[in-house]
Image (tube, rainbow, N blue to C red):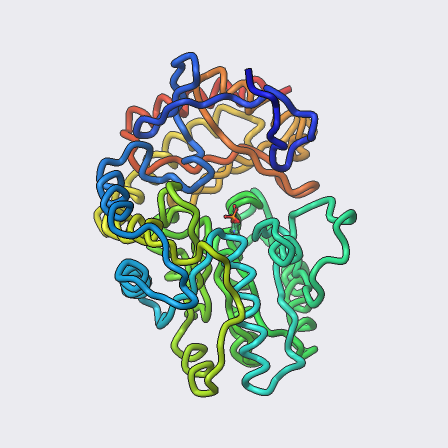
Length: 432
Ligand SMILES: Cc1ncc(COP(=O)(O)O)c(C=O)c1O
């Protein structure tokens, strides 16, 4: 009998025994201790896109365990640590030149903020310290990551948070197409943006190319154009947080490939090891790398497991597994999900909008009054989905959007997608 020693993350400390106990993973499915199968539409926590029990990983893990399982990256290197960094830079393309290791998404975000602020210091712009972030963004829960996360609530007990952060109001207009947004409303968003830049104190804009936890939200083109224009004009860096969107999730290797500008820094984690080992990294572009190099500067960031050779070996295998062919499959499946979900939308009045970016899917739900559904309702839906044999996730930005989130694994057939959507129909039909 377990002693209930675990304090579960982001849950009431008295929570005991309510979590499903998972015992096995098989492809896109997980099994509980009674042998009941669930389709994992969360892909773990968005980090197991290739599913469970991938033989090719087992082989590289065994090999690396036999060869060398740890190095201290401060004073040593190893073939795998170098190999992953080189291959990762080639895989990402887009002007990246160097890589800094981390162990999680939050740590990568922390590290990118440090690199950006110090860059401003090196180029003798030490007053530029502010990180501009979005109020519907999520970047993690370590101190700096929490401080730059717009949607992390209940932070009062943890103050003071990191200084030098400002939030931009996310231009988000659910259920409308771009042409419908009111001209005056657009102007208000753009004015807010300009005001923030005019202060000449901004070091970097931190942006998820697709805001995942906020509910699969992308910035409209008219906003993105002005944002990138202002960043260029004021010499502000772009940090792309691709912790959730990386490695094919949006139908591109990295979602920022679609941007009209190249990010200066890119944070990655999650799918890089398919959830097998904790790992993260920051990719650094040539300009920043050269600026540091010219002044013989260093990055004051490290944690003991950075660049773990087993994690690196797994990462190298991921780069081979999530290749162009796999990304084409993601795009094909995205089309299938879109078409099944469109049919669902037509028969479910509680669906306000379905937002799909590759295999990132938000089903935006409203109650009978047209307001975003409550957290209590979402909890009921999640439990209902579990009873239907599905693991799904939820999202909520109070007052703006709430609903169910799907981050399906990359290996589902059309038939499996159809079956999942039919089960979702029952789940969503239970609202009210
Ligand atoms: C966009 C984004 N950034 C950062 C993080 C934090 O990553 P981690 O939980 O590995 O610290 C997450 C986690 O969901 C994320 O979605």
